[in-house]
Image (cartoon, rainbow, N blue to C red; front, top):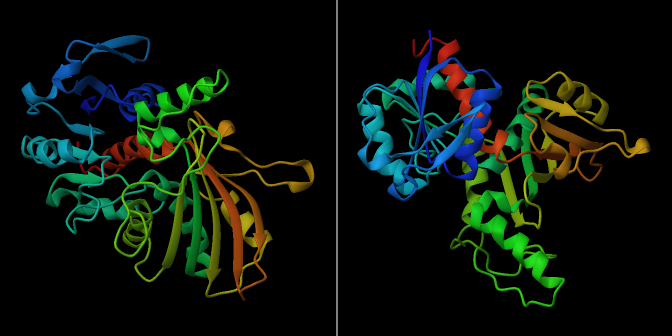
Length: 338
């Protein structure tokens, strides 16, 4: 049996990736509908070997949709996710709007698949922040063995996480610098070409940004509320692929070799870690891949039970589109929808 799928925000970076991944993974869909704002009505988007005509979300009726994949921002999710759910669809939302709702499960299938059982309360499932998704995929297998006490994470996040205009800004600034055009920041608060910016999302009263707050709260909701986590989130001049330098303190003893062996056997993780041969993963090497890559696993001798590591993933895939499709597959496999 095939399912009827709607992709809301089909013209954006993540929406297009959702369509790509639905096709790549041969998702059992009898029908796929591309939806966006009225400005995009009639545009064509690629799907497999063909194209789909984009339809106007404001005029669409979700009555015949089984799964609605949302990637159109919080305002659209706030208004339209409940409407799609009321029409009978299971909604998987990529925005931040529903993530902290106690009745909405926040799911990374490799980490907390059983939490999806609560999806029928509102028929809405939240997808985590892109930086959180790859983090918890790498942390959970180690937490299960040695129990994490505290995490310090510094992120190096690509501009694609800020949308099409941000990618255009990096390209235009980089090109302009070579012809002596003065960069004009628009999508970012500073020049992004040949620079790094320690500022993603708004600043909060405690000095952290909302992006950093999201990582803390989402990790607690997905994994364990007892985990202490502090984050510094940085935008870097990379088009696609988020990187994270992670320092972990455990309750129980764990060596770098043990951590490496655990991660090699963990779902969704690919360990590439041989410093003697310069084997480690950078963002450019993870683009288009499904895996969360872990490199530079080593012991932190400044604490009793510490491990440091480097984690890289395609933020448009595992950080967003792929995780959404995996949630849809989980709904089917657990027979939550039939």
